[in-house]
Image (cartoon, rainbow, N blue to C red):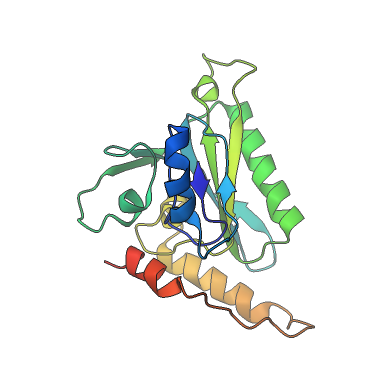
Length: 211
């Protein structure tokens, strides 16, 4: 898998099958000439996404993981996520991993939350190999692989984050209110915030994800 180190919605991401495809994939992922890109082993399995939300009082709740399946693409790519043609080319449903696997995923995402110092909300994406999706099929080779941490998850009403919240009875409005509460109650930063830097490729990338 070749993808940009920043951004979202899998824009600029490619699945490379042959070495001859690599130069084009690197060019698609680079935000500028000579820019760094991420190249990772492809892991086959079921994409899961786990949302985390900080509630008033500071406790953090971990949403159940929805599973996503791209019906007309090799992976959960940008066209599938954005669905500009409203074709509904992705299926989202509740994942049902074995209880011990779910406990492990929950523990791992909390470790990432604490270790990175996340606040407010986040969504952590994983691939769950088929060998640990059910209790009846369990091998030592099966692993949940963390793909990335989204510190600003998508918040449309149909987003995976909102779907995960709804699985435990949280409405979109209640999630937004919790996020606003955390933002307003957070102590002020003790250092100046960095000014955003926009590359020359930004307009092109924005156009790529606009309806």
